[in-house]
Amino acid sequence: MKHMMTTLCYIEQNGTYLMLHRIKKENDLNHDKWVGIGGKFEEGETPEECLLREVYEETGLTLTAYRFRGIVTFLSDEWGSEYMYLYTADEFIGQMMAPEDCAEGELVWVPKEEVKHLPIWEGDKIFFRLLEEEQGFFSLKLRYEGARLAEHVLKIYESV
Image 1 (cartoon, rainbow, N blue to C red):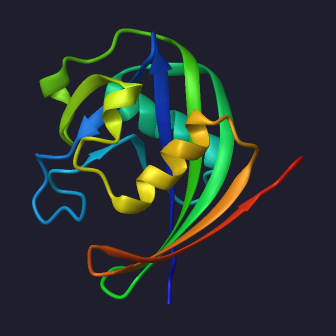
Image 2 (cartoon, one colour):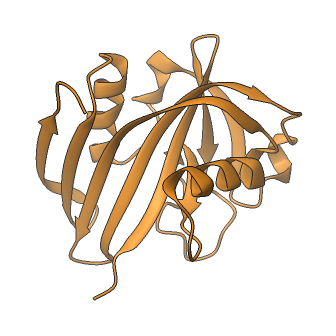
């Protein structure tokens, strides 16, 4: 069975995260959810190459400073497995595309404290807490049964 590999980035600015409200694609597993910026690896890409390409394609921005924060393993009885490389970024150049121009959904700067009140996946709340607490590098396994988070296993590394 093939495992999907993805990147996801939460771009920070003035106490906000750039969020993507997924409302445009047909048959989207994330339909109507709020997520960060990212997507699937292309053949031969490193995690960093995927990150930079996906951020540029979805926002028009070029990241100039970013941090690798953790690996999230998603397991599901409905959609298989995914390994997601999670990043945050706080420096970028370029002109952000208009919110309505993103093919995936609408781009919105959301105050960090409001993110947990949006329709996000239950497991996302765990890694948002880790980011907020400035925890070290982590590995997080999230097992879903349908849309319900059935299990999570967390390992935080003191140093990498």
